[in-house]
Image (cartoon, rainbow, N blue to C red; front, side, top):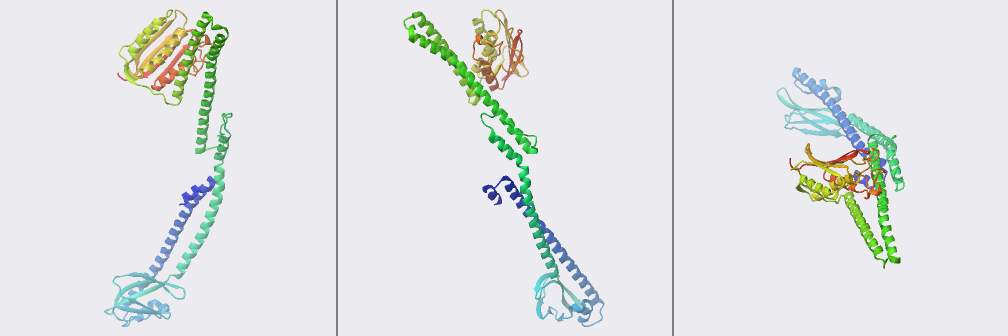
Length: 459
C-alpha cells in the first residue's frame, strides 16, 4: 500500500526513495525492538523462575530432613517472614493461600508443573511456581510466588525509550536520506536538463560523464551513444534529402527546358521534336530508376523489404551474367573462374541485382581493353563471389565511403560516368539482408576487387 501511495503522489524521486527506505527501516526497527524486548523479558522471567526453583529445592531438602510433624515449621524456616501470611491446608487435594487480605484458591491440576501469571492489587504481578510433594505420608501442593512487577516496568521503560530512540533515528534518516538522495540524483537532473536542451538544430549536445559514476555513468554513456546514432541518422537523412533533391533537379530542369522549347517553336520542327521526345524519354527513365532506388532504400530503412528466398544454382546465375556482360561489353576482356554446382538459399533476383552493380561498376571504371575478372568458389562454408578489374581504382580515403548513399569520389566516380551513387548502397543492403559480407581491396590506377560472401545452403 505504501508503494502505491508513493507511486501516485507527485513527490520527487528522492522523497519516494526516502519513503521506501523509511518503511523498511520502521519494519526493521519494530522487529528488532520486539526481539530485544522479548529476549530481555524472557531472560528476566527465566531468572526469577530459577530463583523459585532454587527455593523449592531448599524447601524439599528441609522437608526431607525435618523431624517436625507439622509442615508449617520447615516452610517458615525456608521462606522466612516474607511468606508468614501463607496458610497451608493439610487436605490432600487443595491448598488455600491468603496474602494481603485477598483470598486466592488454587485447585489441584493434572500436570506436574504449572506456570501461571496473575495480577494482584497494589501494583503486584506474581509469577507462580507450583509443585506437588509428600510429607509424612501426606500429599501437598506447594505454590511459590515471585513478584515480576518491577521486571515488567523495566521492559515497558525499555520499550518506551526504544520507541523514542527509533523515532529520532527514523526522523534523522528521512531528513538525511532526502538530502543525500538529492545529491545522488543530481546527475539525473543534469541529464534531464541536457536532454531537454537537445533539439533538431542542436543534436551535438552531450551529457557530461566526468562527474557521473556507477550505474548513472552507464546510463549517461548509453544516452550519449543513442544521441550519436540519432545525430548520424538525422545527418544522413538530411544529406539523403539534399542529394535526392539534387539528383532530381537536373532531369526536371532538362524536361522543363525541352517542354519550353517545344512550346515556343519546336512543335513544327520534326528534328527538334524527335530530339525532345528522345531526351524526355531518357530523362524520364533516369528519374524512374532513381525513384525506384530511393523507394528500395526507404523500405530497407523501415525494415519492410522482404526477400523471396529459394534454393538455386549460384554457379548457373554467374554463368548467365557473364554471358550477358560479354554481349554488352565490346572493349574489355572478361575472365571467368566459376566453380560449378554451388547452391545457396536466397532471393535470386535480388542477388542478381547486387552482383550486377559490381559488374557494371567494373565495366564503367575500367578503361578500354582492360580486364574484368568474375569468379565463384567455396571458402569455409561460404560462397565467395569475386569481381575485380584493372580500372582506375579507389583511393584509401574514399574506400570507406563508397557504400554511402549518393557518394562519389572525385577520381573514381565522376558525373561523366553517370549513375546516381546509389548502386553500391543498394548492393550492400541486399547482401546484408542475406547475412552476407562484402570486402573491398583497391589501389588507385591499379584496379579494385570486391569479394562477396554468402552462406551456403548445401555443401
